[in-house]
Image (cartoon, rainbow, N blue to C red):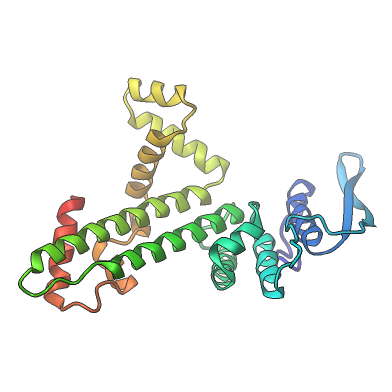
Length: 271
């Protein structure tokens, strides 16, 4: 708990188990130490924990070690992912996103967890939050790269150039909104999600509700509807198009008049 900066939390055994299990994943990934544990009860209350510790001759944890092995910094990055509850393959994440990006996202997640303990919106699923932020940042970087590749046409053909940039901006902004809605959903606990689904069902006509219920409130149609309602209900957390462009520093290389034309055309496409 101290390692995860969670002193004073998870006093109940069923909650503390989550912390212990996360630490076990971390230890087994990085060392040849293994352990199991069980709660010792006095009456109905767990008052002690009994641990059994042993060692294996080779490491066979979450991080598969190749013949060349990880570089030290890559192992540390994977370890950091595990420490914030990332439950997917940490090895693949490091290979996909890179060490520097892993460090940046883990720092962001830890800050969000700390802010949640100090009165901000709590992060109920740090692992899911981490996965979402990794993907969101990667999508943003990819779309920025696409923006950079848009050919700047000569002055006599400004309309075609503005149209191409506006198309890319619309794609970038829609990706941002989709990922923002997914991030809000990841932050919901089970009670939040149950309340949201009840509220959503009340907004639908009988046919729509029956159809979504038939498919278990899942699938692409449900996700599109869920995201739209989440964005409507949590609009204060979502940047508008102009704020988004300013924050991300998009089109800074273009004159102000051209930037304004791009924004107006993109706004029209999104309307």
